[in-house]
Image (cartoon, rainbow, N blue to C red; front, side, top):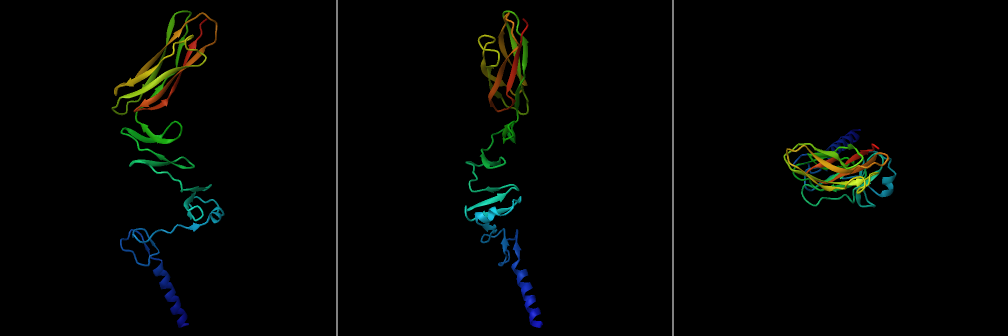
Length: 238
């Protein structure tokens, strides 16, 4: 009985000694089974082959090393995701973004930008100033010309000059017949909050339905476009 108790005490001592864990400890016990800080110990990730990994029910938070693929995998609760081909940036300041199914490298932003979600739902670097174009309406007239006026509005959030290109495109209204096609660049000084784009519409006496054209913004400089297309409606009065 005494021998049994002695062996039991020795076993308890060994188990307690072997379970030492050195976390944030510059001098962990030499027999620590887990040491995050020292230079000669590490964290053992569960290892298994692909067959064994795929037999595990989907459980969010699982993280294993697959000996078949030679890579780390994590489970998001619905599927296993391989970290083998995780990209990397090219310069200091690059970061990774997760689009729901894979990682992609995102180049670092520039001065005056912030990290946000764009109109497409993608994470990226955005500019503080935003641009939006209005719709416009004009009555055609029986002769001569009238002006269809679009307004481009800029938010003024920081002291920087902003530029954006614009161009018309046909809808049911046809350039050269119903209106004069235009394109160009708008430049906003730091204090500017709006600019106008004017499209010349040609009047006629034809009996027809209302017609439409578009003006589209593109290639912004130091701004983010939040509404890129304005619809111009030419009301028939014949």
